[in-house]
Image (cartoon, rainbow, N blue to C red; front, side, top):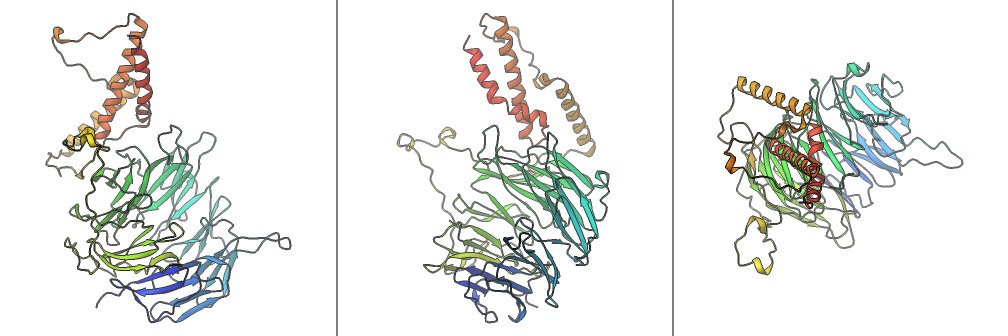
Length: 581
């Protein structure tokens, strides 16, 4: 049986339409375009239902034939979502109150799609976290209410089945997949106490000792928590708005790993700078991080938080795995030029390098063969439109929005897992009349005085780093036995313990050399100043050793990172002291 053809929902100022594609997006005869401006559109999780709100009513239709399932007279609706099994439709509108009604009306409503009746009307003033989170089998639903998580069972929203109370709990994410359900909760720090994330398994909420995993950290104004597909681990991206050191305009970010078996770790990134994007592989065994000052690095890590493959540096700020997990796209959108790097994950080989300038949206088609890039308002109000691509870099279909209209959103119809099997990766560009947009290597600007001279490292603005396979033995290095690895870890732990006791222990012992070859250090004549210079040089050598250790991918402890941050201060201090010499 041939796989189905995914639909693409297109929402703009000229209405809402469902298109049949790819490769060519043709009008779906079963769906009549709604010419009124829609505020929101949504597919059900299995892709069988489609709903939209147009300022007059909320309409739900079957995707297969366009027949209407339900229509609700809700003109103020701004958001809507389906429950995983299409039992409940949740709608939300902006909370408002009047002098006649100071309490205001309940703005979150849960509707039974079978009967069309309202199951429950609730208050939720903020748009953040407005929709309840359901488990995939709908046996559990959870929402945050006044520092508590309220759990409901079997869509019975009149009775709270369980509660999880944590002081100032601000974020939660329910695990995907089947039972038993797990929940990750975040509590921000206060009065010198660290922030923390805990993992619980429903319904075991009997305090910190019942937590499956617990990770505390500082420097967190807000967090983003991301479960893997198998619900075995969570990635937590913590960030603060202001970097007090002044090193980054984007604030400061850290990445943490928590597993349901209790393992926790801070993910050691190999370049300073912001974390732009994080994505789990659909296999749930690896994740990719895009990070560091431009040109940014991108690295794939395993579940031990060890680097597996480094893509080097490049102009990118986003990462997207294909639904089957066999292809990965690194892209640079927003304030970058729209360069995309398409990689075969199994062979770690680049497939194509197309360019989609001015794109504000990227999404994989469920078939794992095509992607859509869109230029949407209000991010960009000119040159709106969308393109359908094959991952080999070919543009298969292009639609520009007519003058005077805007494109607001493009959404692929989702499908259950396994609908589209994984296909072998192709390296030859797919045929198309629109051709390919492979980016040509741009020549960097060079001053006239350097144009007739060979390019040297000193004449480059950035030192480019090539891709590198970081799996043990991938580069031909001899892989250590289990005993040798164990002994190596013992030696590293012993060395780290010595460094904790004596910070100067990092200074390498000088090689024995003849006394005649030793260069006497300059003296300023003041023993006290000489002593200060010597101590500063020792600390700088220790920092150099730490940098070398970090470059090998070995974990660096928090107090050692703090020492590395003082390098600029030490260099200035040494310069001031040496002025006396």
